[in-house]
Length: 390
Ligand SMILES: Cc1cc2nc3c(=O)[nH]c(=O)nc-3n(C[C@H](O)[C@H](O)[C@H](O)COP(=O)(O)OP(=O)(O)OC[C@H]3O[C@@H](n4cnc5c(N)ncnc54)[C@H](O)[C@@H]3O)c2cc1C
Image (cartoon, rainbow, N blue to C red; front, side, top):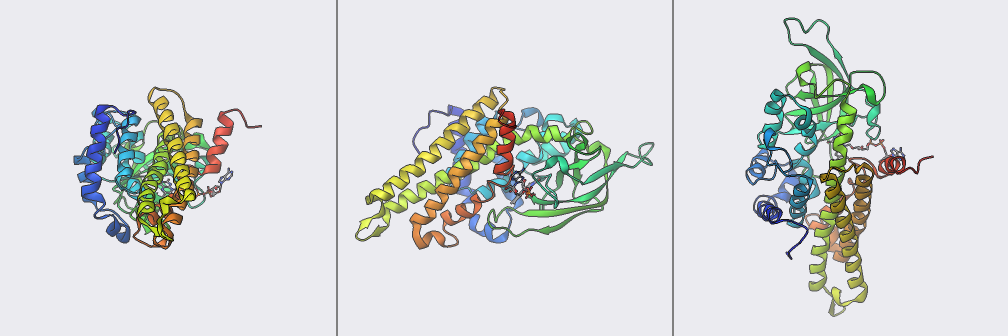
């Protein structure tokens, strides 16, 4: 790989460790995990050992320090080496499940949930979306009511009722950072509560079957009079919406990296294929129309990467980039959808076959414009923040 002057020496070293991890642990097994519908727990421990799980988390909570740019460096190398978007979703679910705990958790919560996720011994999920809707986070209906009979002599408890769906790693998770309604309607009544597997009344209803992200298990969850210690509340009661919104910026930048990361990998695979594959007596790459297609794929990937890196750098410098993170994700997703489609096209019938890498990227790409804020919802948010709303 050519030297990328955007990254520091340390970030290059992190990229080298990431590539070695993906080539050793991931690519030989990925197809089996796609068929199995999940990745093994041992992969989390191996990723932690390779120094990947704690990137951008403070050392005080068990992380390796660094910031979002280190995370970008790592993720870009992860995808360039053949790691898939679904695998990143499954392996790095901690990146969406524990940042709120790392930022506002008690010492006990950090020891019970953050450290074990970052050292690969526990798996956490984030449970926001409900069967009734995912885009309107302020509209969630899962309720947590304090049981007044608890608290004196007995640890205070919430009683939780409701359901969540489309929860990444929800089948395997040891706990779910769950958005619940503890107050009135709207965003001001939302809290975040850690609900552990094994809590009576908390059931993983089923593993969902999907179009892509096949190695990433996705679950429906239900809560029927599930009793959860008040000690599992993250931060103050009714501050959950702000906590979720704060972390969405990082999640959207991360999904932008998924998008241009798998697009870049699909381009690399297609460029090699176009050198090897001959039609009408010449390699595909000898045709001007094919070369131009490859250049346009390159252009779209590079523009998405350059903009996303710039927004991540501004975020790392402490600037508010909520609107720009929406634009970065939407732009990268649009680039990705076009690039992975062209990759399949230039692979011909081979590109339509299961087990061929570009086919997997094509299917995996489709979730990126839906999860973590659908394209339209992010455009709406950006319109308000940029002053274009009526
Ligand atoms: C594989 C997968 C993994 C996921 N992982 C998680 C997870 O770990 N945790 C979690 O909490 N959630 C997760 N989700 C849920 C995901 O975040 C939601 O699917 C997403 O937020 C959209 O919510 P929805 O599916 O309910 O669609 P809806 O909110 O019903 O919206 C449907 C569609 O309508 C359009 N739309 C919505 N609102 C507007 C509007 N205001 N204006 C114009 N158009 C609009 C969009 O095109 C949208 O896709 C996951 C989903 C999938 C498929």
